[in-house]
Length: 173
Image 1 (cartoon, rainbow, N blue to C red):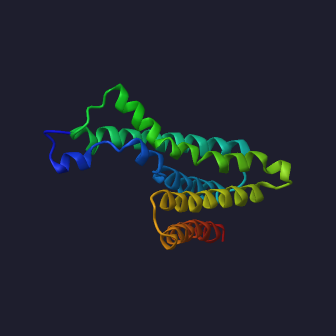
Image 2 (image 1 turned 45 degrees about the horizontal axis):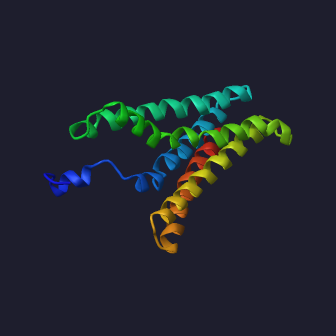
């Protein structure tokens, strides 16, 4: 692109290939879902439907916050927030919502597995942490990282997920 400085090209919107390999929202959304499960699970008894809705609604709210931040934060300085850009950013941030779905489904199907509410919370937490680790490893792999870096990305996210689990254990006692 002529007339652009190297800094302008660096700040340009990511290519389609880069967006397909960006799992940041999914990693973040999985950690968010784990946090929601822990927070709700330490408050006592509640209907499963309430936790399913809390997971999905929280994902939507954080998705909207990320869309707004990307459109009207640093990006507004160099990309006009036209209809195309708004749709592109909405799609790019969609993994935040998508990451809330597996833990919500885990809660929803937990009665079929014979789990009580506490079991449903632990299942949802395990699903969220597994998603977080999986998305982090997939992101590193898709970025072309070495096997060692893929393992490190997964391990770091496992530690973050286990911290959330530790908070759950501590808050319950």
